Length: 315
Image (cartoon, rainbow, N blue to C red; front, side, top):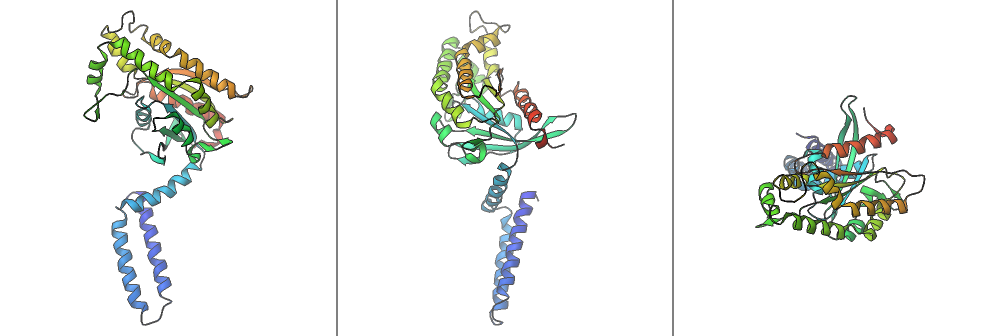
């Protein structure tokens, strides 16, 4: 029996005991009968409660609310739909936790990760996962429990996630890697440019200013621009699908595609940041689906957090 189910079991047993104590104060004629009925009902509930979702959800809601109040390195992910935010999270967490729904468009993950394997130091992490399509949904529907109250934001790291190929679906299912490569191998440069333009439209300076105004506080330590799906780009480049681009310069090619976004992000946080507040900025190239570079970008952020908030780190 898992810890969650044990907790459910204990809650139900305590409820049964309370009911027995309460009913024992009734008249002698009805008391024993009522006690028997109540015990029968509660033992049935106990027997099925540990596998009933409503009880599990109730206990999890209490546990989640408590967890959100604890110190943690908090990540805020922002990016267009299909750019790979959820895949990035699940790749790093290894599927060990499921998302909790904060609002209709805003979910979060809670876990613990090692900062380094040598000392076995661990850090609680809370990662937001924006699930809407409109940028305004990301800011208006962000959960204060996850990112902190206005004026007291708790976000430590922001990831802006872009990619070089959209999510293509067939019969309601996304194409697998091989099918997506086949699609991307035809008119590659035009398709990549179109996707980049979609990303640029989503990360215009005005929106970036709103994002930073929503999440910024002195707790913000780092900002990263994450260029995702590099495995797809490397594959089509190796196939010769983009003239003048080789594996030797594919990283530079990818960075140049998003130079405008890179500069806009830097301008946006510099405009809102106090002069004495230093924020680390970097551009990272990853493949969320393959796991390439994913652990590195998160671990760098954790080590930075541990340096500043060492007292919150477990040994």
